[in-house]
Length: 272
Image 1: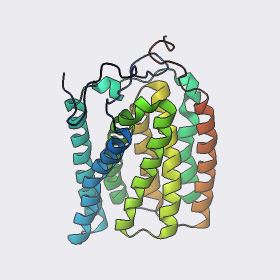
Image 2: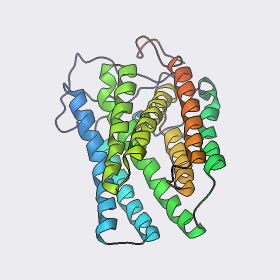
Image 3: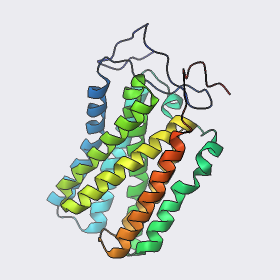
Image 4: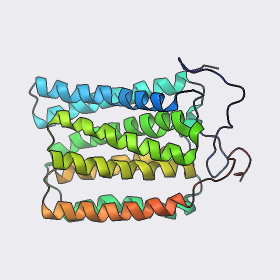
């Protein structure tokens, strides 16, 4: 077995949590879970930020810049997979397995309603050439953010309890989106994105705890981000209305999922 650098095996550590099907979820054994969570979160953004800076320094056109950023984000995803492979939990325990108990999540219908609302409210504003570049970026972002945040970051916090991990992970996820400051985003945009990212992170973390799978977040991230890229960044009244509706749906969904989370000792209580 491989043990993470800086982490120590502790025989008396709490049992690893499980999803609602009783399958174990990845959990790092460390005395400083919050420190590791922050370090993992920052590590997952380094190549992404570097990609934005590379595009700006090279004065790339929008399409070329999107492909360049996709390359850096894709590399970040590969680094995250390498970290998963080098640590003790298996890829399945991190969430690379089929989801279970989708009926407890309302079959994900509220989640996949969000990109539909977004496109309906703001409309498609980009060319087909730009869409192709955004597809590449959305795929890479979906894998990278779910690997680093819902995979690795949540694993650092699970020893504190499922609900604490969800709350802490979503707060860190929202804070990481403030790195868009370096991309020149206006304060209003950053504030809205921070709040929305916290809520998204909360719901996606709940879904991992219930279904035991990262694939839901990866697929949804691709679909939603592609819709967001293609509708543009203008804060028009229609776009703000779309954000308000999607936020209301997400908030209601978060409350619903909270009641479906595993309870008690996950190692013994949640079987079948």
